[in-house]
Length: 121
Image (cartoon, rainbow, N blue to C red; front, side, top):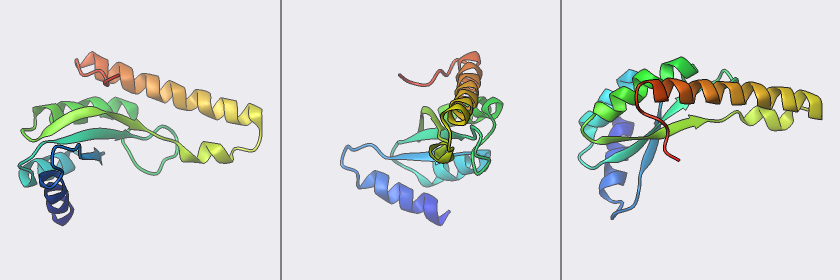
């Protein structure tokens, strides 16, 4: 809750600016919405292969729906990042890794579109 209150303070002090946050669990959405009085952009964090954080592509839609239903949160899109690809040593292996990420991003987009919440842009 402490971090949610810090985010609420940042949103209140933003003077018309945009404050955004990543979520990957339903409990985070309830906590954030309860702490906020000013709207915040929320991005669903998706695990696209790094296996560090985020939900599976199919899990993005339920989170996006919960964000869209919350009073003080705005669904702003999906956050899909695989930072380790830059360290893949060969072009062929890197291409294969990028192709796998692209497939995960497409699956995420399809899951969001299926519930009427396509990512902006």
